[in-house]
Length: 158
View 1 (cartoon, helix red, strand yellow):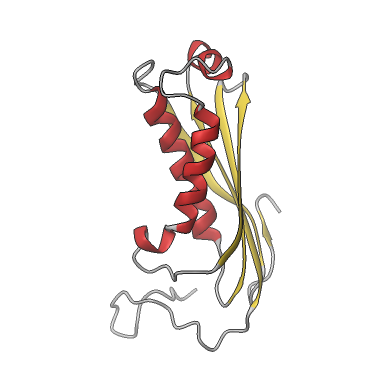
View 2 (tube, helix red, strand yellow):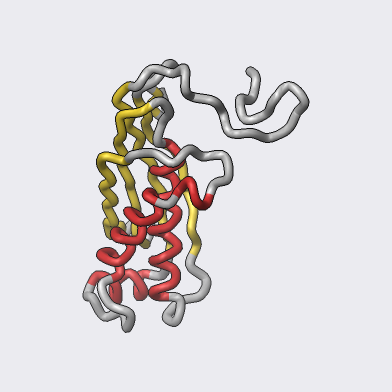
């Protein structure tokens, strides 16, 4: 499999997508922030000193998706048509699970935008409650689903 972000001389470059067909694109990614049950309870009871942790993380994830091309050097700036970020408490973890779904109609996919949304939301959770617990763990960030474009549909585990 050839890597598309390198030219014939081996130099990194932005892929030319001008010849690709405009199609509906969608991607979904997930990740989590593992923490103590006590920290999760504090968040669930809205007792964090910095405020509504899931709400702020959700907004941060949306902002992260919109700024992906500013953060990842070879990503194209895309006209994103939808970003949804869900932040849910999971007592079994214990912690918060984050899922982001991003959509566009364009010539390249939105996988990086979904992954950036999850990463940004998880980092925001950490920032908001690090005073209560510094040893939280961010992990499991991965692509769950993508659809559209030449490569078609991908679903994790299938």
